Length: 146
Image 1: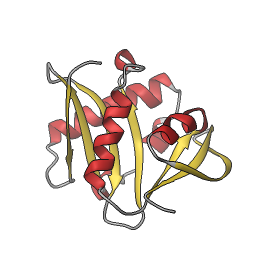
Image 2: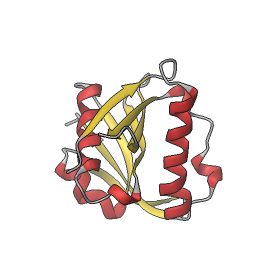
Image 3: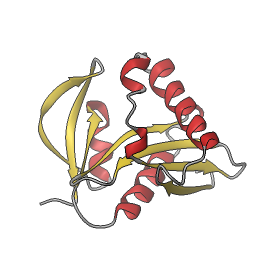
């Protein structure tokens, strides 16, 4: 696995340059890679979130996620790993850092259905049926809840 560092920054701590990096990476993963239109991706809600920034040893942003941390349960979303760095354990490293940052307490996320087993391996549990979001099958998963 590539050596990485991860920091989670609230909206007020995030610089314009960091936000630009996040949006570019999410665009590459979701809009270009998964063909999701930019309308649901750029939703105007980033200012309500903390953002995880996973960087490789050379400083490049290789992973990101956002957390609606001011609500309960907290909601994790926009989990993305650069296509050139996928399947190297970086998504797990990113999510473990997000989970550590959140501490104890309830959280949920909408996982792409094909990633359900991976999220389960990190301690997330599926609740409810499969549903469509951005024209992709998803499942709701919870963490830190019985």
